[in-house]
Image: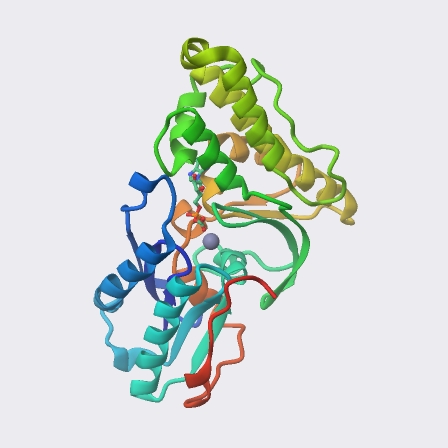
Length: 326
Ligand code: KG4
Ligand code: ZN
C-alpha cells in the first residue's frame, strides 16, 4: 500500500491507496481558520499542518485498517505550493519513510490533480485534455501518459478559484467565495452585466485580473444601495464570465486536437454547477472525479506516485520542497 501526504496549501491530507488505485482512506483536515483573514495566511497554515499532520496520518492508517508496516511506499507533495506548508509534509514523509527504510516518491501537486483521474473505481486512460482550476492554479494540459502532463496554457495572473474568492469578497461574501458566490448567482441573471472573458488573450492562456477589476468598477458605479440590491445579478454575471473564460480555452484546445478528445476537469472550481453544465455540452466525453478528489487531497498524490521513480533510503533525506513550478 502507498501512504500519501499532501500539505501544499491549507488542507492537511493523508491517504492510503493500493497500487491498483483503490482508495482505502482519504483524510482531509481543512484548517477553517483562514476565513477570518479572507484568505490563507501561509505562516498560520504551516503551524497548523505541524499540529495536525501526525493525527491525520494516524487517522488515514486507522480508517484503512492498516499500520505503517503495511506501507511499502511513502508519497508526498514536493511542490508547487506554500513553501512552509510543503516542508511540513516533506519532513513528515521523510521521517515516516526513514523509520522503516521505505522508499519515498516526491510528487508534483499538479500531476497529482491529473492523477485523480486514474483512481478506482472509474479511472480513465490517457490521452485526454485536462482543465485544472482551483484557488491556486488554473491550467489546461494534454495528458498522453500516466506520469506526466504537457502544459498547453495557464493563467497569466489570478487563478479561477481566486477570481471567485476575490469577487465574493467584493460582494461581501465569506471565504472561500466560490460556493457562496455560485449559490447567490442562482437567484441572478447571468446576462444582467457584461463582464470580460479575456477573449483577446489568444491561445490557451487564461486571465482573470481584468474581470475582477471590472466587477470592482461596476460595484462602485452602481453605488452601495444598488450594488446591494443587485448582488445576485452581479454574482451571476461574474460567475458567467469566469466560466466562459475557462470554456473558451477548452473549446480552443478541443478544436486543435485531432478526433474527439476526452476532457477531464479537476481542482476546487470543478464543483461549480455552471462549469459542469457547460462542459457537459461541449460534445466531447467529460470526466469529473468526485469533488473530494477534485479539491486538494492525498489520494491523488498517492495515485500520481505510482508513476514516479521512488527514491530509496537514504537518498531522499536531502530532498527539498519547491514553491513554484520549474
Ligand atoms: O482545489 P481547491 O480546494 O484548493 C486549491 O488548491 O486552491 O480549490 C479551492 C477553490 C477556491 O477558490 C473556491 O472558491 C473554489 O475552489 N470553489 C468553487 C466552488 N467550490 C469551490 N468555485 C466555484 N464554484 C464552486 N462551487
Ligand atoms: Zn490543488
